Amino acid sequence: MTLHDIDKHAVRVTLQTKIKHGAETETYELVTFGTKMYKGADLYLQYKEENEGGQIQTTIKHKRDETILLRNGAIKMRQLFRLQEATNGHYESIYGRLGLRTTTKKIDHQWDEQAKQGKLVLKYTLHMQGSEPGQYEMTISYKEEA
Image (cartoon, rainbow, N blue to C red; front, side):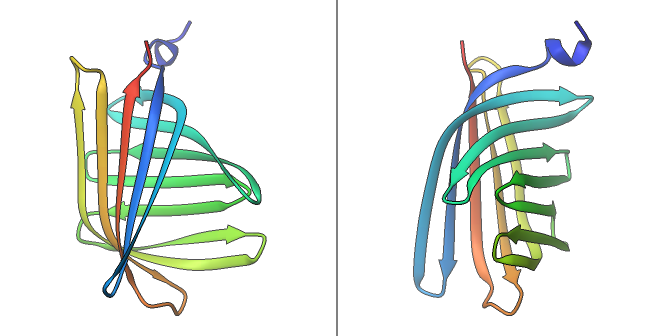
């Protein structure tokens, strides 16, 4: 068994996304299961999602000052979040590939060792190829399974 295997834990993941476009707010929530592990000081969360196109494997890599969101499968996506920076990414589905531009306003990660649960909050403005920018707040809560 390697050191990385020791750090790997099964987690219950709750992903909540709030999207504001003008006066309207949409909220989405997904509850799924995955794994949490550390490579050095970097947190990795991995979980599966389902949509009408099929299964999506999501990996979130969180460092102290940046977070990377990767999706593979029915949707391919790569987005880098860096506090107070505009970063480029992409979103690819059966309908084609779109360029993304994200300006990150907040990255906050908390871990409660006693409760064995954590929360990662990302607040950002998202520009998607020609569309009006939306204000996003993504909260990823995770709890180790006994």
